[in-house]
Image (cartoon, rainbow, N blue to C red):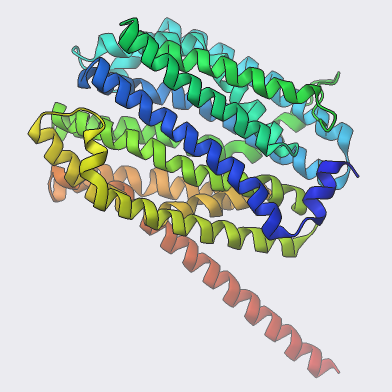
Length: 457
């Protein structure tokens, strides 16, 4: 066995979980700070309309990342399962096909988006006032689209190859450099919203260079190999990674949905308030993604090695950790909302009041979000794709979209904020009910078997 496989198979599960959790959380927290700093710099250095413009452009960025997660998580899960089985050549073939498939799909998408840039901006909720900011930011983001997705997919595979600390270092460099470049480009060089986009792009290039260094280390198992394009393998990668794609893609749909709802029912005050809340949400959700990222390599490897007790333990640890962080984030929103809003240099009292009300309602969702995401991540990591997909579709589409439409119609525009917590809470209840019914069914089945067996005897 290699050093990585020995570690994943024999290290006590608490110790192994923490060895993946801390680098993953630290990396994601730094990325969260990175996102928050982007919003602070843009709102303070360019203005609140520019902040709204970035928020409208974010779904395009989310779509690019969703594709890298789709292929990256699908490929990395298969990679870890095959490594758990000891099939190193097969694992390397999966890695090679994942990278080539990502470059091909994203390359075509970037070209189409650059071609129809203005139409896409209007489709995603831009007004004539906000459009120039959207276009300036979006154009640069699209030009560096392949860099973003390669950094993301390499980060996922490097973590699955037993180097969570290097993946963390890549995120740290990206975050710190982005902060420095944002300050230089916006406040010193007065580049406006283009400065924010270039800061993000160039820092991502630096992070990618760090991740590439993994390929030159001794414990690296990731290697590009010559292969024949295998349709079956590609379809399996896409199938396993589809929950990650739906998760990130539905986040883009949620942003568009919220922007349209606030624009229609509230106006620019609602759109600006949501831009602030969404920046905070982009920060806090990274914590729960970090917990899911920590359990995925452990779960996938031990699933491949058929070590079922270790699977149960890491799931329990992930859920407990997620629930604790969910409660902490909820309390932060309720107790520190004035301080959080003040970071964005908002002076309009109506925007401040509406944002405060939004935080009070929106942050309730964090009490349920972690449970849903970690359950979906676990099922995806053991190839139970249907269950993972059901969880994601329930929370992000099935419950959320109707609520976004009916809440302001039935109650008032202030209750648009509740679409997120109600959808997350309803999804958690369905998961708990499903698990209870599954446990009851298995208990009944076992009792029936024992009764029949005793009769035979």
